[in-house]
Length: 276
Length: 276
Image (tube, rainbow over all chains, first blue to last red; front, side, top):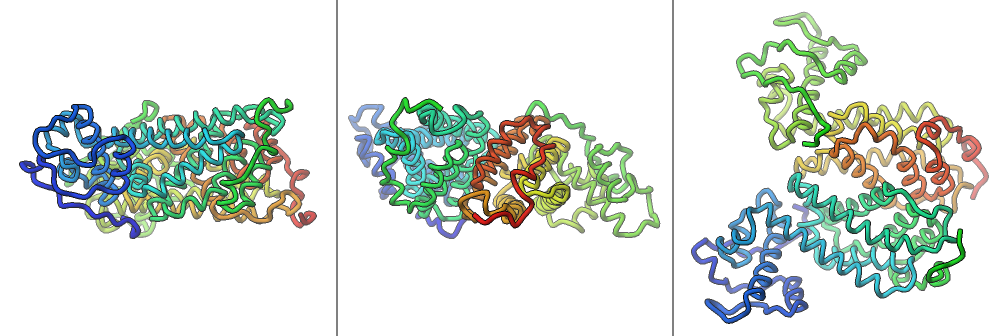
């Protein structure tokens, strides 16, 4: 466990009391996510009149938090279902109603995490008019997410390769989904900007692996908070790999803050620029 | 286990017979390596007059082969010390004289593998006079090694991230050593070839992760044999990332065979070219 990851973990409760919600403070990240989703921070004890789907979504959010916290703190192999139910304040019955086993739970949480990340990427892209700006903000959104939520980043980006073959498959699928988003931006690069109209898929795969494993390595080393400082390097990697060396040079020559604010409208006339 | 990896594994022998070398055929790869190292393919049964270091190196080579074969066939977690001693034809005593446990053995074999790979890379570089040619042949050597020895590639490139934190550390160290080799070539690129004299270390790290995880993914998917066909893509990734877009374009526009034969002396005048 890297020195920089310190996670306060409540002692997991014994089974018989797990169905009563422990009095505990939610991680600020999960608390914020619950609020954004319009879900209550804590459900009333015992039977209550909340709609079933609200209860389930709240349970799922707490299970996500518990899985992330436990995997980040002690690794996937050492994490038990009892850790998760105890930390999440749900009963084993509730857990097994939703998941076949620990791995199925990890994979579901991993899927939630990638969906959340891709939503953030889409929201960042929507703020920009040019492909260059869209690339920058898409990459910035990924770096920011890892920095803002280091526990989730550690559990789902840093540790995914240690979980087993199914998580490796899921990881490949997640990379492919992010590649699709970046290829959509790439398809909007005006043809005059580069010699090649389209690049082979392998180039996207290699750059995606490069980005993901760089993130993963930095997160495992406890350097997630510094990732937003690597935005110019990340833009250099992608712009270079996509055959856009002028954009790459402009990105690497900027400070991270200046790069985020940069107006790319001259470099990349919005669309339908002169054909190459 | 990917469909394309089929490994004939002898049934591991019971402890009491493991010290007698089983009558078995060596994997052609290990057989070739023993021959290159001037080591006998099989040691005489019982006491013999061979020098102790010859015996030990032969044992080590067979343990390497056994570890690679077992990890490639059924994964690291399912591999046991008994599998290794049985397949290698060494006693448990011999095994534990050399290694503390299974993980220590894996890490030692992994280290042997990377040393072997780096030797191949250096040999490939030595055939070339220009930095561009050296890059191409260094990358080709890595792709060729994976294609020629898919079992070793699967066990040590494809599976290293699943072994545990110590193997992840070793993997980072191995990547750093390959980066050092490529940075030495990079330092010889004539200054007139690009705007930037040196690139930040992060750029090398990202490209290295991109190459390594691409290899790893292809190997796990059973496509190691096709890796040499990806030489133009791999050169594109590196040349682009290193700020050499003309070289990248020349590489991606070539067939793999033409790229290997290419004379780069015009693109990259041997050294001390005009300053940039």
